[in-house]
Length: 181
Image (cartoon, rainbow, N blue to C red; front, top):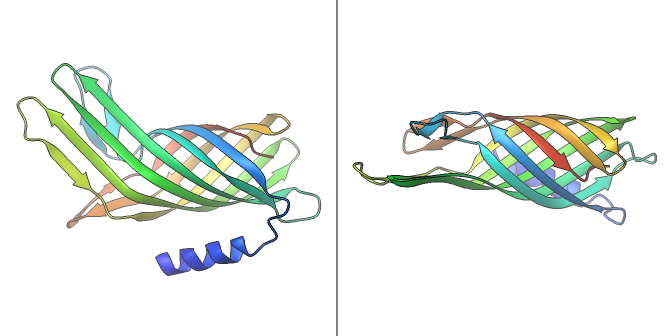
């Protein structure tokens, strides 16, 4: 599965990058299996948290209404309480084909989550560390360009984390703000 993803990325990278633009993104993701929760409303879900990403966006047609986006990001979530703490984090690599029509954009692509990891250290419990295998998933998104070069949107990610014979659904729904075209 990773070989096909690498081949697709190599084909994408062979496209003329002379018109590539910087791409920046911040997102809030929620969903997936709950890994831990507190007595209050705080919880950590597999695949959820705050994401920061940077990459390139390269137009693929003459009128600039379609583009390839490649970005590297960091997704994380944490809980700090009186009796302990818990953390989730993963590096992400997204490859998206995005098509724009007026102020609306639709995108589809793949995401690779590298070394997803959950850890906690809570008083009265043994510390826990879960190191998931790298995971490959699908991404679908819609965005609205409220000013040129700035968009707000919704994203659905379908991905599963696996390790040592068990898996956690890490699928999420998120809202993002980016420097899209």
